Length: 176
Image (cartoon, rainbow, N blue to C red):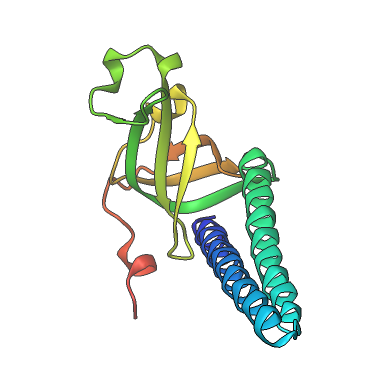
């Protein structure tokens, strides 16, 4: 998901750059073609204005498609099949206040309906993924613990701590 978000951001920036460049180029070429038509009676430079407007339209199309794809990804983030991942290592667990998106250090002092709960897990394939979860699941997750996670999309449905303690499974996560 993080790679997809970077791709969406890159498409938005690339589309914006193309749109700005296309519109600036069209303005400059339009002025040049107008001067050329007034001096020499030749307006062939207007063809380039159309090309630069096509570049600007391509940039706007890239931005629009990246925006639509980003909204679609966000709306479908909790969809998908149930997956059991084991062993997973809990890298971080934190709560954000819904209104300000600020990290809440003492989350137990807030009403649960004002918070969103997140857990960052290191998966067996050595990637770190962030999952949202319910307060009940959040209470079972301890940073530094190893266990089994049941996920659906980007939603952590259940976390079961392995009885091996909080020592991470280095043989799985170390580079050989």
